[in-house]
Amino acid sequence: MRNSIPRRGLHNMQTRASRKAVASLQTPELYLKLTSLEIERSRRAIELESLLERVDILTNRIQTIVQEQESLQIRIAAQQQPPLATQAPSANQNRNVGFTY
Image 1 (tube, helix red, strand yellow):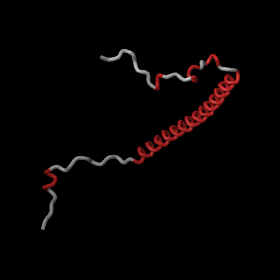
Image 2 (tube, rainbow, N blue to C red; image 1 turned 120 degrees about the vertical axis):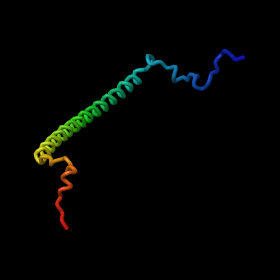
Image 3 (spheres, one colour; image 1 turned 30 degrees about the horizontal axis):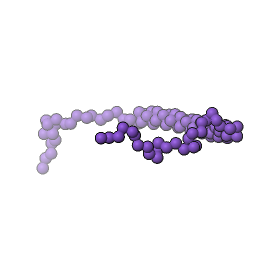
Image 4 (cartoon, rainbow, N blue to C red; image 1 turned 90 degrees about the vertical axis):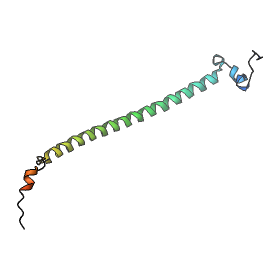
């Protein structure tokens, strides 16, 4: 028969640190938390600025690539020769070659 009471392991134990509620923080701890949040906000703002700069660089490069592709397609169209006859010679044309020995 299995015991209906669950076993308590290390992950179920509560420590004194986990019992401390956020509402019971003292004033110095609140200032420390406030300062850490301000530092994180500053870091995220710097990351955002660098990300936006990177997006601008990538967007400009994509536009340059599209312009280069269009100019190359124009050059290719200008250089193309009209296609040569694509039909193979018929069997009758091959008989009348006219070689004599």
